[in-house]
Amino acid sequence: PSRHSCSWSFFSCLPLSLSHSRSLLPSSLFVPLLSVYFQVVFRTRIYHCNISTQGSICLDVLKDKWSPAMTVSKVLLSISALLADCNPADPLVAPIAQQYRTERDQHDRTARLWTQRYAL
Image (tube, rainbow, N blue to C red; front, side, top):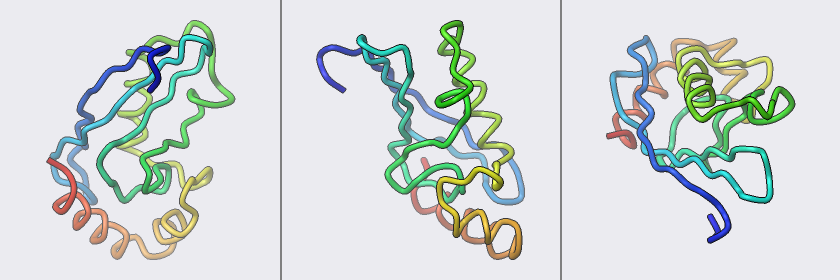
């Protein structure tokens, strides 16, 4: 982030599910002062079809569903929902989305492994 933006660091809590144990992911949220859009980046790797290995997130409220009424709490709630229920129909990482649809057991094993390896 530049000196012309606001930024917050926060922890995203992975939900208990078949693919993740309860873990924390260090994350950052940036609000460029010359833009109305939020930028959210995960600073920890996560095996998720909507999150790249660089931490970028494919989430509609950060793209085409953006509204000036969007608050930080609404963005964080949307991220929490995405972590609980990925969207393989709009993937950022197509191979992970394909694996999620066709080899769910292997996907879940890999997600658990990445969670153990990279999350807090």
